Image (cartoon, rainbow, N blue to C red):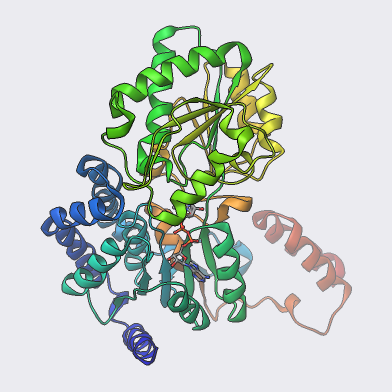
Length: 483
Ligand code: NAD
């Protein structure tokens, strides 16, 4: 831990030196990160393969490609983001100049999770560096190959006096949380999110919490069979595609009308076979469950007799390889763990309703999700979902693509977290917007100072309630009346 404290002292010193504030340094770090990704693509694929069994195509789509896209986007926008913005100042203070100046926060701590161990570490890092901060990155110990890759490789490319990777589990994390930070950016579970937030309160440290939860998908009856096929493919891809369902914005469960459930199940079964193969004993293109603890958690969920009775497809588990077959459950009990906790695995409950409009009440009676997906062509229903539900994001007729849109904020609401990042939102998350005003010594308004009189009272009342062009005119009139 002495080593940890020495590292933090060095990072604070680097920040104080002002080196990280310049645009040249920021761009150099982003370019170095891009080079790191280019030079080490195979090593990243290998690390993701060993930690999670992630196929290189999935690894590029969800991790390497995401980071490169994000770094390139920041590089192309950073001049604009850093430029001070003019603030419109009331004419009352004329002559005056007002600006909003983004400045770095200082030393920031980033905690990442194991399911996308590269992108969820480096994407926030891009934001922190673009904004000119020094950084400690604490990757998840559960994706140990990726954590060790980041710890070994980052110092070879980035400014090692400004960015440090500190590896370790709960003890290391707890010790880090005792330190004073200028910002903590946490990706992980709501349980640990609470621990992070209470530790941050000690030093009044601002936090961003990127948490999880149950993300529902509403499937309206789509009359056109080709639309339905597209919807089912996207649902299957969004449930089992990214990290075998171990994804914060992955689909947790599907809401559908009773009459439509059997069609959906048949189409999903066909899609599963096409994506992952016919034989449940040798499934292809599926990540494994991250560790035995998570595997046992999912097995326990399925062993609940009432839940087991609701399985309509899949359900086989391979303990040796830590894989679970894509599994579909029809109407499991709503008070079972599968419907009360985030599933975070390849189990897909289908919940049937008499009318799809009931899905709004179903969602609203549970914690606010990180994402809601809705497949529908009914414009009135879309509007109802939009205005009557609350979630970190809402996507119509597709799943998960919101994650790769740099121009949209990514983050939760309520129990799914708070704060946002991606693109400019990342830059803002790691910056402080400083208000800067510069007045002239010319033109002094005596009404702001004592001794008080009725004229000054009227003047101040008007100053707060009128537009300032009119105020100047009134000022002259009032002055004549009271003096
Ligand atoms: P986690 O909360 O167990 O761990 C996240 C981080 O916190 C890790 O770096 C871990 O080392 C650290 N940590 C663990 N215990 C700690 C403690 N007692 N004190 C301090 N730090 C501690 O989460 P996880 O298992 O890595 O990830 C799964 C969860 O993360 C799910 O709930 C998922 O929905 C959520 N998640 C959210 C997003 C998002 O962007 N919103 C992305 C991925 C995962």
